[in-house]
Image (tube, rainbow, N blue to C red):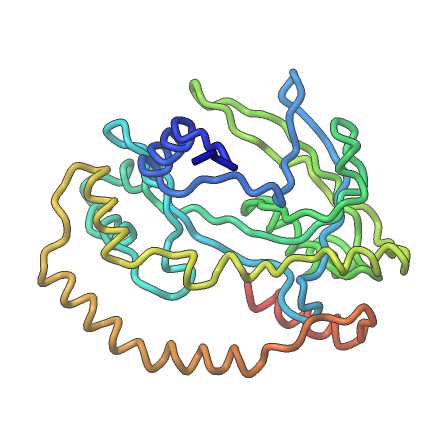
Length: 293
């Protein structure tokens, strides 16, 4: 039989093997990346945007674990993000007094996801005028919260298309030993400015729902994480009694989780309209962002 489609199974098999080694780590082309030049630096101007639901919290916060031991990587989202127990966090608590250095290496990392509009990107002008998801860490989040809370100047709702501000994203590469790390300490917000109405009308059509990063399907079960964790650190899996205890605790939480789910579903709204109730948006944003620190 003549083949209509030809697939490179050799290449696919290698990708499968790589995924099995370290967990899912596929590139998401929707996420904006500022590429460093030869000197390890780069800069761009971006604008933080609302969530797809214009009156919801404009960013999501995700905990994750990523470390390498015995030649194998452990990369997984931490279920404490969604209020579930994590075997790695539990092991870290038990190990802290004996080996704090190992605990620090295995400890959870914090990432944030938000929609952005790229205003200027000298190294990749093709990105300008496009909406991306932006993954960032605690340092940039601190700058966002300082601006929103007016820590140093008058408060600015930086996610607001009318009263927000552009963000000067400054990347420098720092070295610790033989490893290099991105540093955004020099980044800062410009003075408040409004997006043109026709620009925001087009932008709102491209917004993503940042809550997709904290849905239940993005997190493995306690048993799945524990099994992978045990393989990487070279120890046996948790005992049957530990698993049983965990399952009992999860059952006790089921009713509360279901109630939370019902509450969330009850407050969900239909797809956002281009016309935005500005006062309602600002009120929701201020209360939501402040409570999600």
